[in-house]
Image (cartoon, rainbow, N blue to C red; front, side, top):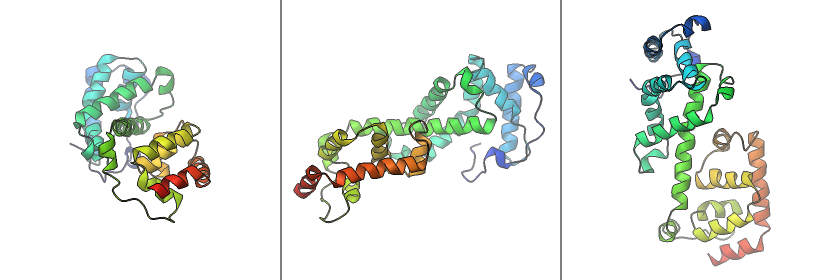
Length: 250
């Protein structure tokens, strides 16, 4: 069964005593897969559960690069990942099937977690959070590619009415971002990847700073850095005579 949107995270439940690693490793893959499914059912039925079996399944799949274990992981969690896809705000307008994004998310996880990195995931909850982030990442990347392929005619339909004069530069940017001319001009004003990410995340995708940070943890160290990059860019744009002329012409 699909998890209810209101369900708490796994860490919110009382977990049963975790089995020792030696005992877990003696289980056959078939037995491990069966116990992981059982414990997942207990979790979704709000019963005490032991995440050690599912964690061991991920460990064999990722750390040992066991393809059969990875197939078992895929089978166990494909419905949960599909559920995450369908809840994503970009899905209704994506034009793709949920299975497309589900498969891309698993591929991203498979490529993103090496044997060395697996040690940073201390429990099942941390692994599932990463998998959920992979869902969000592949869907945002898809939206980005789709935006870049828009025809000029389709883009200009989004902005029939220019903004009123005298409004803040930030408002102008937000309301005119779909215009190809402004977008191309902005690309030449952006100094680095941080500013590029801020413009795309905040203005094109309309994400909140916290969502931008979650999506690009390797680009920013904290939310303050996102705000600084945003304000530095806007301050530079406010001083631009070229932008003022562009907005007046609009």
